[in-house]
Amino acid sequence: MRLLIIGCGAIGQTLAKAIETMDEVDLFYMTDKSEEKAQQAVKQYHKAKYIANTDESIRAHLKHLDLVVEAAGQDAVAHYIPFILGFGKDVLVMSVGAFVDDALREKCFNLAKKKGGRLYVPSGAVCGTDGLHSASVDKIDSVELISTKGPKSFKEVPYLKEEGIDVDALKKPTVIYDGPARDAIHHFPKNINVSATISLLGLGLDKTMVKLICDPLCECNSHRLVVKGVFGEIVAETDNVPFPSNPATSYLAALSAIAAIRRIAGNVWIGI
Ligand SMILES: NC(=O)c1ccc[n+]([C@@H]2O[C@H](COP(=O)([O-])OP(=O)(O)OC[C@H]3O[C@@H](n4cnc5c(N)ncnc54)[C@H](O)[C@@H]3O)[C@@H](O)[C@H]2O)c1
Image (cartoon, rainbow, N blue to C red; front, side):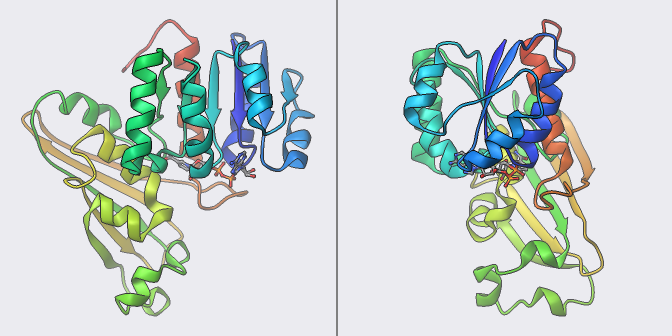
């Protein structure tokens, strides 16, 4: 199996370390908009090779690739994912928040269907997506995501200024947003990935409800997913540990990508 990792940050580098040890992978490429970062990254792995972060370079390597992993950002999704799916190649997308853009999402989903490439979105920094996936086969009544984070995660959010909320002045855990996922994502783009994943799996961006709580006494990044439907009820809690190199990203998000690649590379899928 041969892969390309786009983005050599917290997730990309953690992936590379794991992929290096996978017997199924004989070679992987890495690229980044910072050439220096990508060049430094590939030096650490025997199986890794650098490629330039250009359309030409990626196109030239595509025919040798089995999977392209995006771990870069929403701009990279918009730029590269339709292009790669257009060649019928499989992609794994971490910056799932990009699919809040209805036109981009439709384009990518249609290209996957038409050209035969698979589009994988790992569960990321939240648990309970497996149950939500199964539950959505029948009627779901409600999906609610309650995310609790410290004040640092809500710095410089224009919406909070407009609402007159000063997160540094809070004395106790306070609900700072309660409404549909689409608006939550619009007002709090840093919370975009988990809300997007949950919405895409279940009731969509307008019916999935999001509550954001700012807890002045914690550095936490936790999610409580509550799903109600014909099947019964799911309550899934995740208390995430942040990456030291990028506190905005939860370690579990990188682990979910590694787990997804292991599944894709393997023949036995438990808990699918
Ligand atoms: N699905 C989830 O639950 C989840 C959780 C955490 C993070 N994420 C997303 O995954 C992505 C990567 O996260 P991270 O913590 O590794 O970020 P990071 O900032 O540590 O690393 C991103 C890397 O990508 C590079 N990059 C940015 N734009 C690029 C482009 N257009 N082309 C090539 N390289 C580019 C940057 O130079 C950087 O090295 C982010 O978009 C983040 O929002 C998703």
